[in-house]
Image 1 (cartoon, rainbow over the protein chains, first blue to last red):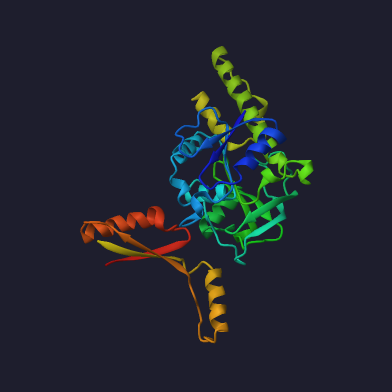
Image 2 (cartoon, rainbow over the protein chains, first blue to last red):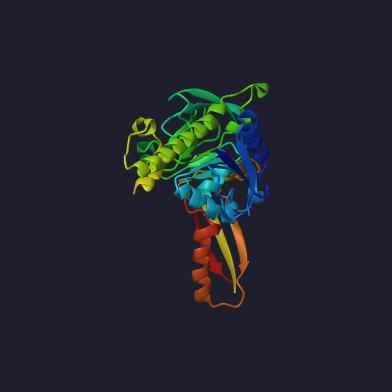
Length: 262
Length: 79
């Protein structure tokens, strides 16, 4: 599978993400300049942390209009995976690909620390290899990580299992201790903590590794399903694959498969 | 046509910057200050268009970029 890391002017965690995927996970990854128009051939797109466009106006407000963002929308609408980390999360909320908004930390400080997170759901392509309720330690580094969303949307998000990570000790004032959320279809994830900085023993923390391994497992299972679906169509039969009967099948897969069979 | 756009956090949303400034003002002796809210002032020169056109443009600009209506509210004036 192939990851793509989008580089906006002012991104500064793009190299960390690239390194984690290439060297810690041994998977194919490419940088994608923000002025690019297409994302063909990529399975998972990472919007990295940093200060895109100097955080002018609001964090992520200008990056949202970058040419690449139309392709990110198309990629997400096709059920493919998108993950926004830190500034990437802020961009995804500004772009309307994720609900809510991120505002100034309650204590007004830029917080650089490693904090415990609770994995709230494993029913996403990003968290399937964690255990529900598991506590993992992931670094944070942000000044605007205070997550806000209106009550009605929050209620729907809870019902639909869109709260993915929460802080054990809320560092920034986020509503309901929220550290990471996904969209309704569960193929777009945004989180303030940096899993890409927790992928190697030498850095003293590998708790972020399983997030990327979950993505890889999800994409590789999907390609097995796609291949099987094509094969079945040719032979005129339709057997259930292991993934189809899996309890934790991400919605993104369902959509993809329906597309293939319709 | 020139315009001023004011963007502020919605009243329902806590403004930690405003609280910090309020505390600083109190330390300066202005103990009567009960609330401070921080916002943005954006000045625009819209060129040679009518007031109606400017009003229509400004609403779209605010909804589309200048304010994030999840957390902020806006008002503007032509001048």
